[in-house]
Length: 152
Image (cartoon, rainbow, N blue to C red):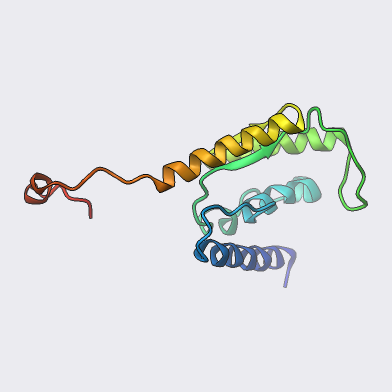
């Protein structure tokens, strides 16, 4: 399997597991990354050889309510032995994610400020998503039923 096939296979597996978790009934599913993010990360490692957003990261991906994008600014680097801490790379990645999320038409929020401010914003955003999803639509009235305007 070529690199693209491997990424596509992993992305499909991750998307499947996300769908299973969402179907389990939790009101909120938070993922550190998804197939869309994997496609953006490809640019980081493949540079000009990156293929851009792939179908497995866009059209094949179920809808997302919102992406929470953490800004690199104001976050001191703490080496955990796994991640890269170069400020220029982190700044570029933030920009790439902003561009890709916007181009794909995704709803997203940039989390900035102190850790407490970022967390508070993330909580406000996710609370709003949960409230919107829990709200009932307009009532179906007898008039709407007889005029054919009922929801289908």
